[in-house]
Length: 286
Image 1 (cartoon, one colour):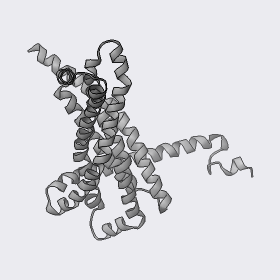
Image 2 (cartoon, helix red, strand yellow):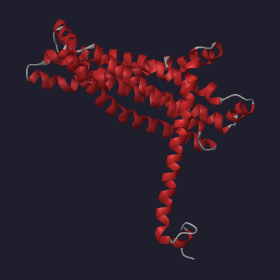
Image 3 (cartoon, one colour):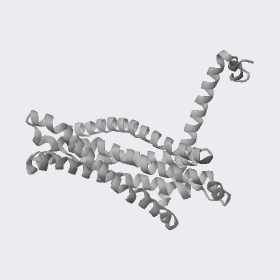
């Protein structure tokens, strides 16, 4: 028997084996997609209870420290250098056309609307998402999840819902820190280094930056935090045995979380833009 015949799917001619493999891959992908949403539904059902019961709050607070407090230095460094790099790249072009005083508008709007939420989400996907996937994956490999099930305890309620709730609630807070540091980094480049008047810089920024810009960025971060929590916990719960499986779950959680954040950012930006135009169009009528 040739190598081609030995690799063919049993019961299928060699010419159609690729079609059978494609069909299996599609069915497997759809099954995993359905399992993920069942997992997400159970997680979101238990998440509100995390903030209502004392025993659940005791599980929730340590996750707030691990996900929120320990992530603050990374978020602050990311925010300040994003604002500084953005200002450095744009200041020369704005000075050449006599619009250097409006640099605060560009830096603030860019950071608050897009760069702050997205980069904060990406950093959390790498730091928090990988840690959650590794932690839960190790519990899965060492059969700690099976031990909880054998005692009549739902591991999703005990392990996943506190982590998910912490991601959803703290990602907007960390995003706000990132926004503040980004705006401060842009100010540091423009005002002390390039001698733009401080009052003019902030006057243009205050006139251009609206509450809607801040609210839209924070709303995006809520969805980003939910995606990070769900994807990383799901990958940890369903990782393959062994150290290789745990490492692969960590990598997949970060990569998939990063891709989903970018996709969500596009659709949320498109939807929020339409909503903003609809609201102002409605107000203009009256």
